[in-house]
Image 1 (cartoon, one colour):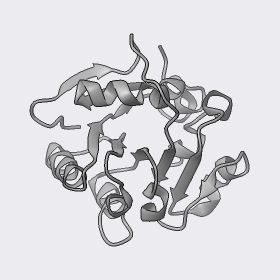
Image 2 (cartoon, helix red, strand yellow):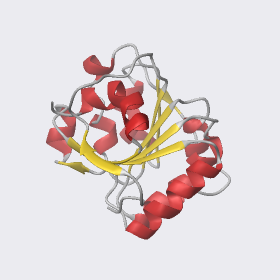
Image 3 (cartoon, helix red, strand yellow):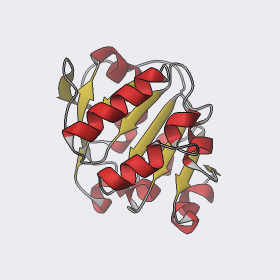
Image 4 (cartoon, one colour):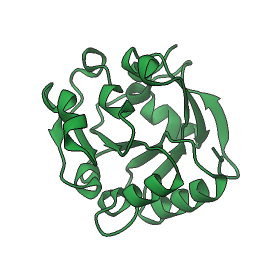
Length: 178
């Protein structure tokens, strides 16, 4: 995936941990990774709203207390952190953009984290859309697949502002290996 110019790339595992208790929103498309992505015991206490094109794929999280949103916009509304993991540029674009897209639901200061492997052009466009809404953007593709996601063992390859990354480490850490 592309990393916007002027950003730092480094794995999430590391030193400082942000403080506070963010509201988390997960937005997913054709992949089922997000359904197993936040291992519930590790994210206990974080309010979680999820959306998936196929609502049944989000059922395991809903049954553990997550709120199921009707649209990506609804999933992003009121969230401090919005995470998406999708198949490709087209899927990502369809979830983030448009009247019901996640960008339309972002609030001022929200952090959008795109974990898909995408083209540098779309990543730059998405970063600009998020920043135009007053949010911050992190490009964070992962290594690993469904088994690693289910066990919290993926490695995030994060591009973006180091301070923004530090502010969301508590959200990413339970999903990643140290």
